[in-house]
Length: 499
Image 1: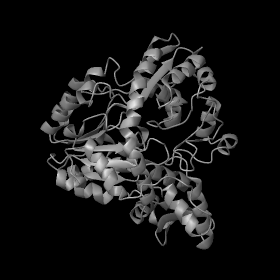
Image 2 (image 1 turned 180 degrees about the horizontal axis):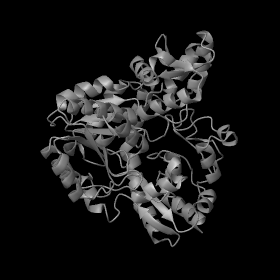
Image 3 (image 1 turned 135 degrees about the horizontal axis):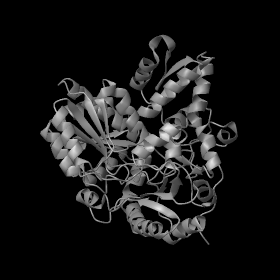
Image 4 (image 1 turned 120 degrees about the vertical axis):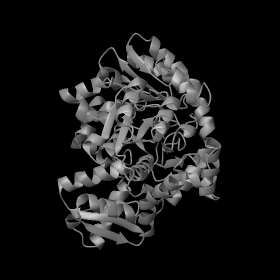
């Protein structure tokens, strides 16, 4: 009997109040989530923490609104006082009420759909929400919850344990080069803003996005470059000649490049050593995000000025916390300045999240070994199935050579496989018994129609679909993250839905 059964709409994945994923079992549910259909939203008690405000944050904010007489206002609880100040600045000081109560900080604004959207989008993009565990602990302290959810926490020095484990991944880096953040997006935001400030002082304001990147990374590049013309999107990660022409024309104005290695969701790997060398020749900085395949699998620090990564994936493999990391290359010419400035901008990782991460980080190698044994078998099955049109993974022929240049071992491929179908997406997706929800790099296998969740505005308009097509992305692309369940069950469940 298969380990997989259909999960009901809204079920947390995993079964923890702090789960980072939740079940969206049908395409109708996916559309309803994106369109905020009340019939779907009432089943979602939680979701990916930067996209769905956690119920503990809502409960605590509602209580504080009553206590502080802020009726008629929306209160956003942020990860720090600094983040509250940034949010207030984005909304406009005349429209907001700065908020603090003990160790809690945030911003209140008059109830308004426009202000709500601006505030939530900002906090989503930069990773500025208060941790769900911090909210839980505050609710317990105030007598609004009886106790925190029982969980295993590291009993020793959690920061030291996490850094000790990370230094085995980044042996070139000192402890001071390993900068923890409350989530991966905040690590990216802090590193980008620091690098952009450094380069802008030298008259360098152009930032290059290589390939299709994760939506919030794209948002940060578009929103925080100095002018619209300073954001340059190079669609083809393999176009070395095009990059060289770009640097020949604008090299003295290019501040840096942002790369995902591999990209999300096409899992394409550029020629990292060659691109990094090109950037250094022209005085540009390189920021590399290896989250898709895991920093433990890829030796990219020598080719980067800063490595930015989500620890929510693979490192926190149980799927019940968010965390991020920025690693400064100590051999980089600007290492000292970047280390200080990124550290000053990062949002802190809450103590109980850190203690939970310290428990899980020691299992990373074991989890990766199980995933790596399964991924090539699932990829081979999909590649041979007549119902599957195209399959992307770390060792796809177009990327294989580039990937192996930076892989720590030939089998270190990460969990992600993306594929498109020859038949209708909805029929396959609705029949499939695998867990269906956002995120990846978990012990639990997860699948989602990624472009619907990340770029619903593009998949639902002719212009958006044309934009995706120009980047080589099928709007109906499915993103599959292989977990640690028996590979035979994963393959059999896919085969059943493919028919």
